[in-house]
Amino acid sequence: MSDLTLQETIAAIITPLGESGIGVIRISGKDALSIADTIFLSPGGKKPSECRSHTAYHGWIAKNQGAAIIDEVLLTVFRAPKSYTGEDCVEISCHGSILGLRAVLDLVLSYSCRLAEPGEFTRRAFLSGKLDLSQAEAVSDIISARTDAALRQGVRQLRGALSLNINYIRNALLGILSVIEASIDFPEEEPQDSHCDEVAKNLKQACRQLDAILSTASQGRILREGINVVICGKPNVGKSSLLNMLLQEERAIVTPVAGTTRDAIDETIDIQGIPIHIIDTAGIIEPRDLVEKKAVQRTKHCLASADLVLLVFDGNKRTSKDDEMLMKKLKRKKTVAVINKIDLPRKIETQGIKKHFSVIVEISAKKHQNIRALEEAIKESIGGGIVEAQEPSMVSNIRHIRSLSAAKKSIVQAVNSLDNNLPPEFVAEDVKGALGHLDAIVGKSFSEELLDTIFSKFCIGK
Ligand SMILES: Nc1nc2c(ncn2[C@@H]2O[C@H](COP(=O)(O)OP(=O)(O)OP(=O)(O)O)[C@@H](O)[C@H]2O)c(=O)[nH]1
Ligand SMILES: [Mg+2]
Image (cartoon, rainbow, N blue to C red; front, side, top):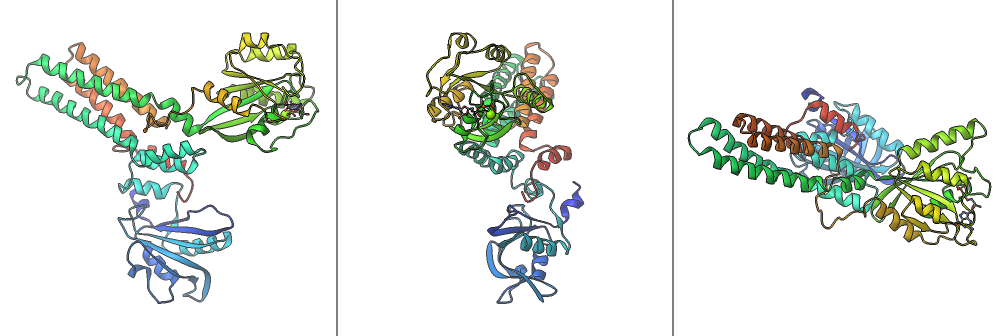
């Protein structure tokens, strides 16, 4: 995105398109107020460009110099730099009608204004210094959060919890760098050994601080991205009933006919704060036709990407060769064995299952028995869930995790260079490398490609 493009005024509908109480259109850029002047009629005749910042006005949006009214609206003015994007902004709250919103947007776009690119409002907020890059990314995390815990994590990052930690380490590294550079410029001033010890000690401390942040990465990622849990097992054991039980709705078709489920069914649920993408699969073992062959392929594909498998058994039947084969196949996968149909007389032998899996939960999907025990088992199997209170600033974004790991590698290298008595120029280079990686997280240094990658994942209006 060039500088010229960023000078253009942009607009988009920033609320979801659908029937609702209100729908909002945002205009941002140097022509926002003059465009609003042209299309807004206020009962008192006041023009938006004459309005104070952060004030809202009732009026009408009209085209053809006021001849054709489109909607009754509330117009809010935010003057630069005190707006979301840091530019002049106008937000028009229309009635939440798809046609009405489109008509107002079309009218706005017929002036010196274009449709905003995905994430462009937030990109402009970043470029005008309203947010750093990790905070801009948090906006997207908040919008897509699937659980309360993920939402809280997004909000913490937006409020700058991660940036604060990064800047703390960054400042320490800058201090270390100035000591090293002084020793390059004035080699005779200080005895070499003492400053080397001090630099090594401070570098190791920075390394420990990075480790502390990185240690939250796996939990942070689970919170942000969720985990894939795949339900599998022989036909008719109650896989779809189990999905329905966890979702607390009749999502999948359940029948006594073996081979009911063909296509994988994917839903997201919140199990004690963790977003779980749960997938019900076809129980077909020996495909009899092309449809069943495809269903088996799909099940295999789902299993390959599973973080956790729920292998379901029918407690009312003895285990068969097919159960054995499935257990062997899942040897390397993290698996919870689920004995279903405990409301019926028990016929299953669990000795064989215990040999393969340490976690076994007994449920009745039909009678909704032991849901809590199953949820606990899922939570424990993926690492005991989220320990939010202890870790107020988790790192959850893979880009941040990679940059933190790279920064740590550079610091370890700096320590090695010191240990091997390499010239201070080498140590300085490593420290600068670490600083570069930390800068990339908060966006103190960035490339257009990086911004394109980050903001293209946003949708229009963010
Ligand atoms: N008594 C009893 N019946 C159950 C239970 N869970 C499922 N069933 C019954 O078992 C039959 C099969 O259930 P489904 O959930 O369709 O089984 P499935 O594993 O998804 O079957 P496929 O999709 O054909 O592989 C249905 O008649 C269910 O009502 C349970 O806990 N107790
Ligand atoms: Mg099924």
